Image (cartoon, rainbow, N blue to C red; front, side, top):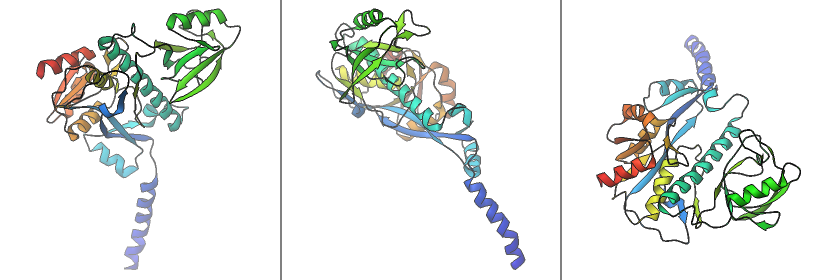
Length: 322
């Protein structure tokens, strides 16, 4: 008996160690599928109810031990990827998460711009101020301005539109700093930024991609979900709320894909895991970028995979199949 126990002790110790060793991989699995309508807040204009649901889908990331790694390799609903594909060398997971949250903030601005341009009279109909769509890395604005910030004043003077912003920066040149009054999250702050030469931008610049302010208050909650891939579903959610026609017709509609300011839907990662999440949430339709269609179909069980190039493709499909 003691010999058997002596034989088992090192095996138990080895199993204990293997259970706690974190490997240089990430496991991607189905994440949450969230209804976007309760997350989109619009004030100052009429909105319309919907009978169905539009779901954004996400991927859940985890660091595996050897046992979870083997289980993931055997599970078609999960993927195993090297650590450097998720967290680039030289970055920490926390830093990469902040990048992902910034990408999500940009996608929300892009989605609202696309929906308002198509259905809301934007940008001709707008309020004063300039929204920050994105920030150029290693530019004067990095760390001072963030996607979703609303610039209302420069050096104490009200800021109207993009032409006004360009003129103020040109006037300052690279010789002096400008004081920006910024609103975000219900708070106002002052930020001093000195324009400089930024690669890819003509003339002095602070390093932001600016867009006109929206015609009415419009905010989107995304919580702790990061990355740009919810852009298409944010766009459809805003359109559904702003237009009297009910696109959903009682259906549960999911999807994924980044959205550009021109309304194009671009490829994403983790599509297989997102299809599984959508099916688990009861969706009957899954919109996917054309480039990801084959991967989506490879795991679909009882859900219609609908490839789209633009948000209008998705709208037309919903209108045609209602």
